[in-house]
Length: 372
Image (cartoon, rainbow, N blue to C red; front, side):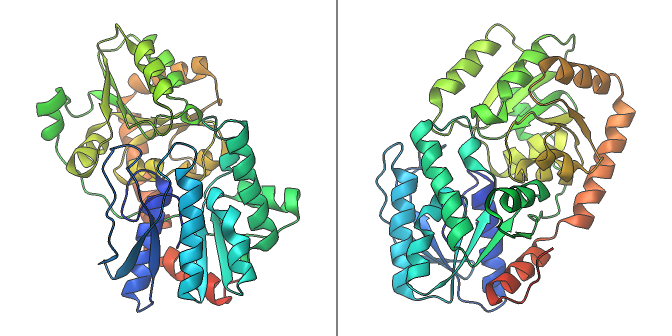
């Protein structure tokens, strides 16, 4: 499997998906190799492991990476594809549009290729003109050269049909069951108690629109806090702008990138979770928040609304006034918030299963799964 960061990382949804699929396929007896980006972690700054290793039955191979902004992802994809071709696998699975620039190399080598399009990444605001053009080239390469394309939303399915006359297969992500964690560590570190805050959790990038949430929250007359949890991703200037917006409002807390028990506690004890994105693929953070039984508020883009499936609340994309109105309504209706959270948890538990996703993906590899 070739993505754009590292196996086991929680930097973004792609890394979570690759990790969950790979370890399940390995447990079923398949030989699985993930080609790992080297260099520093974008969010934490931690250095990557440089040796080949086995994790959860998965062979993890680090590949050469030019550790510079604008070159790291592209160079890792190129060297990962070369390494994968040399290993002569039955299938090479590319994750996200950028790495698909290298997909024709595998196709020319006679290896079956599968691409998962996690979202229309060239639309993301953090990319400049050249970055967007590069990613769009990857999208086109997948459309023209991949043996199979997996998409995470029906809107993406329609897009490929209309833009490239290319059929795709819809396979959603999965989600592991989640258990409530009491507010212990987060209370000691930040004074956060159960139901005392509104939560945004994700990469601090323009297309996720956290500034919209800060703008709407600043107008609210509430003693609840706003927790912005996440790190920047090639967008440190944008993070500074967010902090400048919140300056003077002591209710707003930036936690930085969080993992493990801290992450679980933040999800478990939030009054509600808000994702105001303009662009998404299939947001893993939204699925996680629902799995923890949180009431969720999202923009009305199809990729979010489809996941909510009526078990949450939406507002008009890009409209801070509409977001403010929704937040005002739910702050005044704690019982409704509780009911929506319960319904969200039941929906995710019923509809999103990683074991099923892994089996469906294996059927794509073998060519036995039908499109729908």
